[in-house]
Length: 394
Image 1 (cartoon, rainbow, N blue to C red):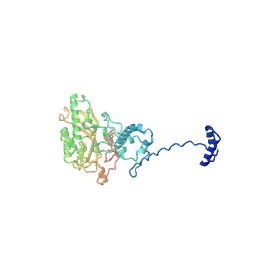
Image 2: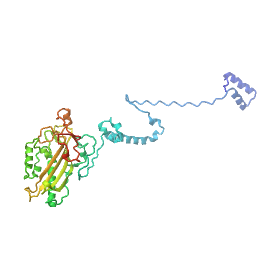
Image 3: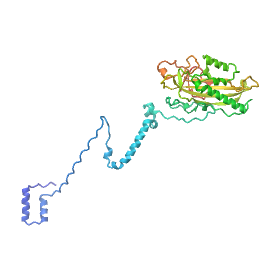
């Protein structure tokens, strides 16, 4: 429907006056007026404009999202809850900043391969292992490839879970064996343990000192044993090597990191047979892990030397052999050293490899022999290569 044409004010006044002359009532006037000029409802007054909120000033290049707290009508009611959530979230983010592994450890490897090493390192299991009661059937599983530090020198090594020092050398229960009573066996086992501790864990010996106490436990009446070791200490050579029995580092070249040496192994007792008939044998098989740094001040690269020793002590029957009561004979000994520069002339000390020496071209040529896992205790030392070789890990 089209709108009726509007009339001027003068025409409208004339129309009203004519209606009055005709005697039309009020209701009749209203109906007549609506036919000529429809009445429009009055417009609602306009609300005053809301003053504009001043724009937030952000630093140049600052990227922000929408101000969702202002757009949400319930923001005021939930502000307190959000504040608590914000504090909790901030604390969580702070924890992730310190320990990103808590998050990265849940991500697949494809998403973490490009992250820094410090973000993907995972906490290692340091739960102590139970004592070794027999030869293991396999090498230890690969540990996290975390590099050792001055604060954590066994980081990334299976030895992290091994016993500390002398606690790792446990003698079996004494029992009467061969010609020896239970009490005699107990004393011999204690003496064998004393030798291993003195020869491999004495801080003075590790720092290059003379292993006087350990030497004093050896039977002087055993041909060539004690005198041979004395000569090797005084004039070390490839033929006379004191490191076959004693763990020693040159104090001019390296120093131990901390006071802990990790140890794992076992000791057993048996009555000798064959060439060892008439003696009680104490068989020992232990691995020692030594963390060291360069001797110069400020050195912080930690290297580990791993030494495995198999020593068979013998306590001969004094009724059949000439022996010294309370002293130990040695029937056999073998050793294998991981991370030792075996190309250097023998000087009576271990010489660990350091990455900085390789980088500077100061290290000896790396051996070309087969790689050996120095933590693998599943094989007898006779089964390992005898030539100067490489280690698969330290």
